[in-house]
Image (cartoon, rainbow, N blue to C red):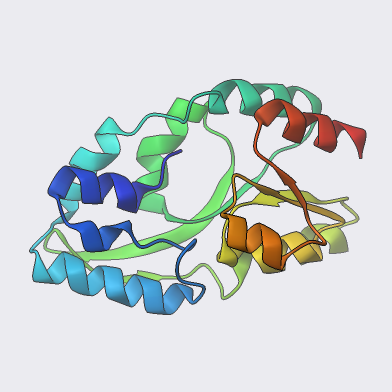
Length: 185
């Protein structure tokens, strides 16, 4: 799915909302920054819901996910929020997703609750403890601990600097190449 915060920046014209986990490695710093912007601009959950209603999957994402699910078990680990995922996941055929939760009071997003710190890495480790082989893909700073914990980790559509700083990880730009790599493991 496209980055919700970038979509919100485009809809509202608030350029500061373009900052993502590709730009800021500390998720708490990023979320506190976002919450302050939402408050400063008086953006409510209904406004966010309008953005979510407009978001459609990236070109090729549904076909990729369908092909992947036809061959492998798939679990999405995301730093999005339940309120966002509930609106977006039907577009992807309702995959299983583990994510965080927004705290909303009087239609205002006032805080957020992490599932658990570093939930992506911890989920990989929990799956490994259950004797699952974990192959992981991601594109941001907040994915690196998960990718490095997995038996096989790859960057997909990651920024050049993240790719350069992590040569131990495979890197792909095309869905077909990524799927081929996953299937070959």
